[in-house]
Image (cartoon, rainbow, N blue to C red; front, side, top):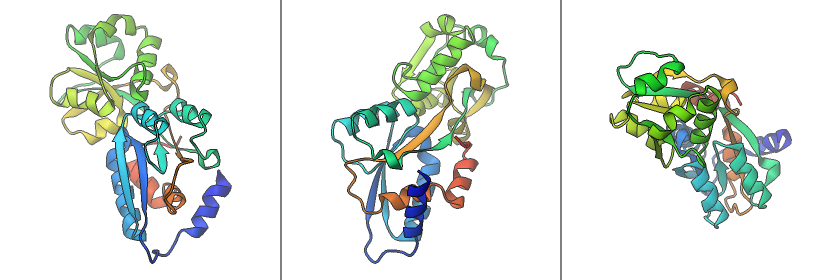
Length: 245
């Protein structure tokens, strides 16, 4: 991967005489920060980025069904592995770009709680989560709650959303008193407060890998991949709460 990044970086530089477009399928939790990164790259190069945001599982299925995209920026190594096994990735371009943290949120203003208190404070209310069997944030959340011995108690009250931003919206709108989302989601939504953080050892590492797809047609896909590693992009991701993988 290092050789790929360096080669692409050497090719990255002056604005091209003819603008090109790169299409990115990206996990919903990346939206605010990746929008900024893309806008900066567009300004620097004169090229255009088209980004489709959804649950990683949804995007992976769309790619497998032939949806046209140049880059897949996922929130799950498993779904990236699935596309790799199907021969849909240029595996030499794949790398782990970002990490994240799993948190419990409540409508703002809210005070911190101990995770062990969740069943008691949840009561008959709903616990908003992304799909627990297919969406990365939901899978991580189920793992964490299971490790803490809470899943069997709270699972009857789980309200599943199509993606992590859907779960966040349920809490922000007051339709669920608690939700399990990423720390970056909590930062992006002023109507919720983070009330607890799940220990990293209770779930698989949260990794955001990216790769160019075998069906990519954009001549600037490698350039945009490289831009994700620049100081400018890393500072934007860090400000949003993402960590190093």
